[in-house]
Amino acid sequence: MTLGTVINPGMPFDPALVEVNRLNDEEIKRVSKLLITKRLAGVKGKHRAGWLLRAVSCIDLTTLAGDDTEANVLRLCHKALNPLRRDIVDKLGLNLDLTCGAVCVYPARVSDAAGVLRNAGSNLPVASVATGFPAGQTSLQVRLDEIRYAVASGATEIDIVINRRHAIAHDWDLLYDEIRQMREACGSAHMKAILAVGELPTFTEVYQASMVAMMAGSDFIKTSTGKESVNATIPVGYVMCRAIRDYFAKTGVRIGLKPAGGLRTCGDAIQWLILVKEELGQAWLNPQLFRIGASGLLSDIEKELFIYAFGHYPVGNPLPLA
Ligand SMILES: O=C[C@H](O)COP(=O)(O)O
Image (cartoon, rainbow, N blue to C red; front, top):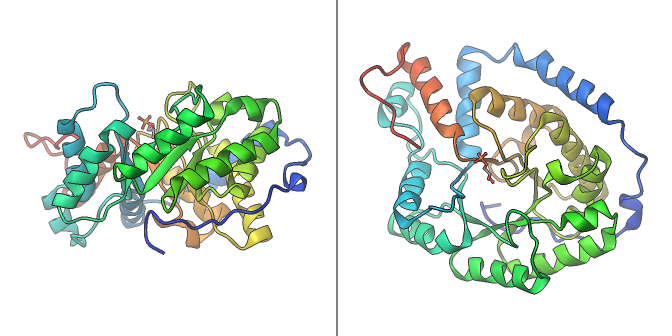
């Protein structure tokens, strides 16, 4: 399997997969917190540095701002290709091929990113948000056309947003039909479905929307756009992992997970790696099946790895901005 390819053929809509007993949100918060705190204390030193390097390879290095230009997209691409400064790479004896998982931009900036990566001789995927990101509040036709525009511009991964109205109203068959059409509009591009979990009523709808997105052919399910007031949280990730497990048990297809929104620190990244390892297993701990959507996480990881490598903060030699 290479990055940015379709991994999930999907399946016909099966209402039985969304007719589930209501989940106990408070119990899920308690259990997921316990799961992380039990493991977190053991992640230290060399082990922690190893997990941070794994996190780097799974980052979808993101810029999704109104003032994005060719210039900052160029810097983003170069950073994704060379995520750690050379002295850290040399000191830790790392493989020079270490890159982030992808870059993630708005559709209008896809051709800039694709051009930079092509000129650099890289096949790093360009992920584009689409379908009226972040709210998705436009006609289906416009949302589908936006996917086709992003693919024609060079995106090999498309991060769609689901129609929250259908999830809130429990119109699961309508949600399925829309996502299925989005899957078709993506063509051979890999599709991630953003659930915008902060705008879904309870964890039960998070589970149900996850199932519908997977049945409709999403290769990944993604927590959030980064623009909602509540974004990626561990309890929500726990519910999504359970849905991925159930889908795998039913179909034999491994769907990826992408937490996104507000992930800024090494601790955030490690908590998600622990969750995925505990709930989905080692097979998911790679960029084919796990991505972290983040605009500001890499600089914190780079800082911690510098301190790990050299034993001090780089005084007078500031780290370049991501
Ligand atoms: O998909 C990625 C998110 O928009 C990134 O959110 P962030 O800027 O909070 O890291």
